[in-house]
Length: 86
Image 1: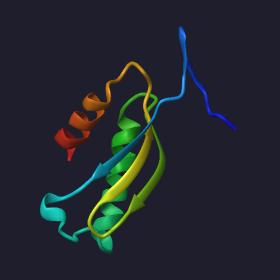
Image 2: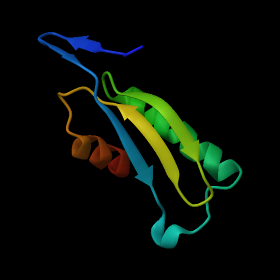
Image 3: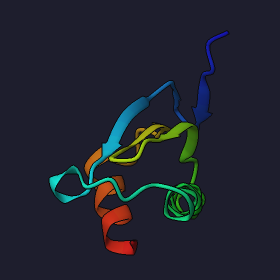
């Protein structure tokens, strides 16, 4: 089923696939660091209004996330916020 969201004058379904990669794709997301990265993605998404993590997958050398972002935020703003906070 399609998951539409509503704000005051808009109905939307904006989902973005975002991949975080460390420099040189070093395999640093093993074990506890991977779990910490996953927790940080959820924590940062909760800090922004209506941003929701739909899926997250942590690989040894990158992290895949699917985020639902309302139209009032640009994806670049969300990425800038997450890089600034981490």
